[in-house]
Image 1 (cartoon, one colour):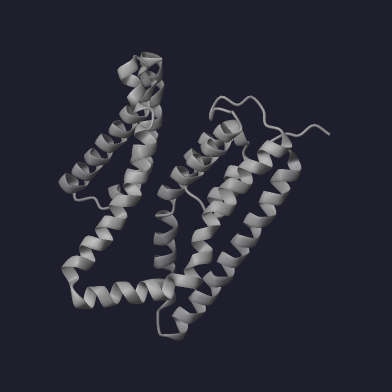
Image 2 (cartoon, helix red, strand yellow):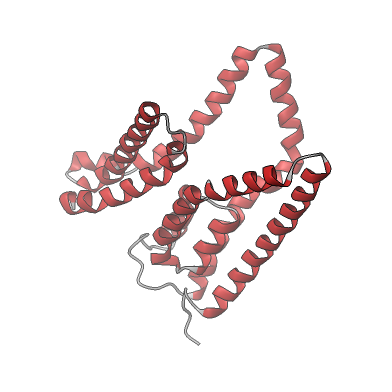
Length: 245
C-alpha cells in the first residue's frame, strides 16, 4: 500500500485523539458549571461567561487554522491538525518540522511527497521534543516556582530582571531562526531577507493593531491582533518572494 500523508487511517487516529480531548473538555465544563452553581453563581452569569469564552476562542482558532494550512503542504492535514489541537504552536511546529526535514536533505515547503519513515521521523521530532516541557512540570515545576517566589521576596527588582531575561532569551532563539540566512545577503543571495521582511511586516501590523485599540478603546482588537498579524505576514511573503527570488 502506497503511503500518503492524507491517508484516511491518519485522520482516524488523529480524530480519535482529538475526540478524547473534546470529551475531557466537555466533562470539565460540566464539572465547572455544577461547581459554579454550588458556590452561588447564577445560571445566567455562567451562560454569559460561557458565551464570552466561546467568542474569544475564535481569534486563536483562526491562528490555528492558518498554522494547519502552513504545515499541510508538507505533512498533510492530519498531523498538523492533531499537533495544533492538543499541544503545539505554529512557531514550534514549523521549526521542528523544518529541522527534521533538513536533516533528511529536504526543504520545508518544497516537499512533493514523504515516505512513511520520513513522516514518522518528523512526527516523532515534533511530538517528543515538545513533550519534554510537559514531563518537566511535575519534576521541577514546584521547585522552580518556589525559587522564583523566594527571589521575588528577597529582591523584586532582580526577580523582574531574571523573568524578563528568560523571556528575551526565548525571543532571541526565534530571532536567530529568522536571521539564520541573513548573511547570504552580503553574497548577493537576497532570499535571506524574506523572513526578516515578513517578521517586520507582522510587527508593523501588530503595532497598528495596538494603536487602533488605543484610539478606538476597543479591547477586542487585542484578541485578534495575533491572527491579523499572522495573516498579514504570510500574505506579504508572496510579493517579497516574487521580488527577491
